[in-house]
Length: 199
Length: 386
Image (cartoon, rainbow over all chains, first blue to last red; front, side):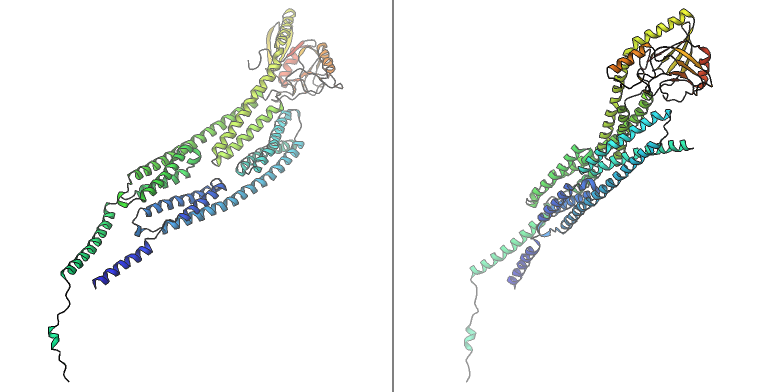
């Protein structure tokens, strides 16, 4: 009777060890999560979607800490489910960030393209207005300054295009916005001068 | 038939030997001891094994996250790098300790690493915020100063017929300023600062260009001073009025007997800096002239006018020389009809080469001088800004 009991206890222990003691740290998942984060960073996720990228990085750090928290426990009591969930979330967030980069880049790219077209139209408009501007003797100096403004904006176009072509859409957006603001200021000034003349 | 079972009364059951009994007892004792030891060791693991500083570690990676959110990787890169490295070291150390037997693990060093990581992260965050605040202020101040400088330049050099390139530089500077402000508004302070610095460089080149222009122009200062001296001497000798026009000072002065009587503000042609060379160049001539003719209200559309005898002999010689040297077109004409007239006071240099005064000033001047009065027009008498 005693022997049977002893065998039963040992048997249960062996089965328990077989089922629970074999819990292993999800190293493959850690590696794949790190790879997903590296890929997101390479796609400039930290520049275009910094919040999403940071969330993925935070999940990875939390998961790494959780893995070691589990590793610190008695082998039979380890559970990596929480760490696994964090890692899966980190991978998902990293992939989502990488996907959003493409979207965000495309959005900024389209914005720059649209504003470049607006800029070209605004320059054309400014040149037309410049021709109509009053040519009085006293306005000559003002017109020279306006012409210099238009020329500076025109000269900025190749720089905007070069920045755009290099893929730095954020800087290209700042440049095109600055040029647009400047040329709109010139257009307003010319419109006012023309209106004054027609009064 | 009856069976005899009486032999059973003689049957003795099987009995273990004393050695067997001892062996059984020892076996049981061994198993119990093993179980007890295992249980004791198991309990000891929980009682004696050190616990990792999980809360501190959690705080350290949350601090790392906060530092990243504060853009410490961009604005306090060195401290952030140290913090991130410290976090990696913490994980490595923790992993290596976790591989040891529970009781022999040492988490004191781990706690130190966690604390170090947390401290570094907090430092990186603070530094980043400070750096961003400082950059923001620097950009705002630099942009404001540059804007002020541009408007000062426009005011200071606005009356100078500066090269188009200088005007273009001012426009480009304003464009870069706008770009910098756009970048700063999006938190891209490094790029903003780069734009401001480029704008500064553009603007700093302008005084150099202007200085070059003026230095070359002011080489004639001794000649101009001589002309003025001769004119004033003539005034003293003849007790008569003379007119001195100083282009850089934008003043017309009337002297009698060498004594200053009146001073008026004047406006010139759009290309007033330099001598007149040909008709239509928008320049006001420099030289010693005389009033050729006084024009009343009905003789001029500029209120009142004093026509001078431009071109004089010296102007003709200079014109012919320039033509011969190919400096001006062979078809160019020397021009004429240079006057001191009214309808001025517009605040800009607008004439085709004449000297314009406000009508009230023109009236005073008109009444002070006669035909034949000497008019000496010079670039400057004291150099620029003196």
